[in-house]
Image (cartoon, rainbow, N blue to C red; front, side, top):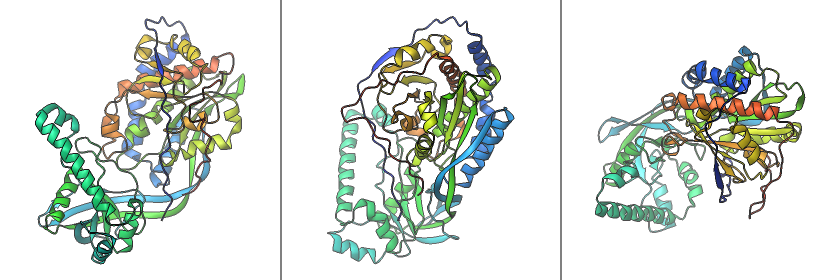
Length: 508
């Protein structure tokens, strides 16, 4: 059994939006040069292809992550930017191979399924009946049923009544049908919860109990709520393959098992557990010429889940920061302050890479002018939160007023914003009391269709939006570097108390 990392808590505050003024006349030659290079000489499509199509997903501790970091170093070197990989700990190494899953009885159908990260493979094809956790009268009856599980696949998720997105039900169903559906959903969820409760096994222990009973594999389904899209996370236990089936195929197999048709599955899943392997962040910098011990930091996590290519989480944030650094090196090669970019590892496991960097580099924290973090999809940046720092809004607003209207016209400021205790890597620095701002982007159905899903691929990237984002980040980094003094650290304290910096997990 391994340690389960729970999600961070994010405080919610009422914020005030301040919309940025428009119709700006740009007179700064560096800003003009940044705009022209970002919009007319973009490298974003080629960077995206190399990272997302050629290298692919970047699961922490995987060969894919290691290969992607080598690519980062090569790219930065080709632009004349010094970069390094900085080890901060170890994590469980894992290599994904192929996953082939078929229904072989009572009929033949190739199923859409993905082995979950850090799950063992099958060492060749395995075949077994698929069964559902049964209706039992209590723990004793469940223990008796467990004696029949050996050699079988066990379905452990509640199937969806329909894999149509909820928006379509709301748009197309009659009011009577919609009311009936809501009642059916509630009743089905309650019945499934009651079924699991009667086993007497806590949900957190259920997969381990099934593996100990000899299950040949566990089958789950985590539907995102969109057409053909599932969330792909990691396996909860060791000892047997854990497979996620699409909403539609999971429902098919579940109905066959529940109605006595004895479905049989054949699974051939290749995977290799690699033991504890070093994990690192990739750091690149353009040295400052006047205040080299003060820092403007560009921030985006580099790791991803590996059910797809990690395109919008967070390949897009990665290549925006890379492109901003490329542009700055060309048009602003001698910044006043050091401009540093952090491509963090382990964000998906608890912000571990950025938290470790903040712990290991007090000199960067102490000299931090501002950090700009981007981590939510392919959309244009529409929101900049002050993260509870009360003196930043006039300064950030002043920066934006110097930028082209086409870049800033969609942006609003959250003032004073929400103090971050988690969510993404800016929180690793906010907790130290230094300005770290979240650059929030337009949704583009991120939560439903690409966030942690098997559809987070190159084709979802909107390059017009990213070109604007790269220009914005480079311009903000330039203006922050040129600011006469360090930004103020004054901040609000939420009613639950200001968050403490929790030490990074540096091993599995």
